[in-house]
Image (cartoon, rainbow, N blue to C red; front, side, top):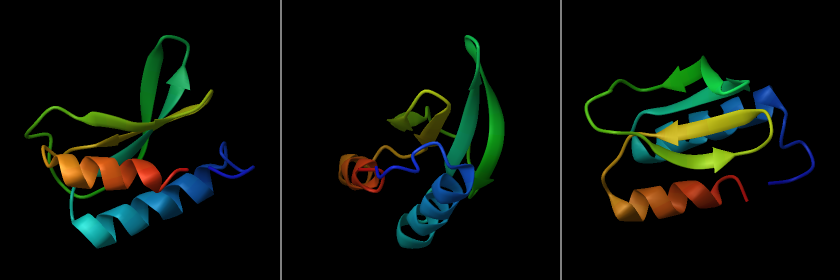
Length: 79
């Protein structure tokens, strides 16, 4: 991801794009010590275990999908 990798608005816009393209639940969490706090999400779910598709020093983005193709493509959204 580019220089603004800690920018919450940038990550939220990427989540919106992912949801529009794949229609799968995606959400952003903020790291607080050893815990994470929910920040933003698109979609409905919590039916299958999430996959971490992005992580930096402040944020983690999770995707709920069991489709390996979608997971791999989603990871490229944050490069």
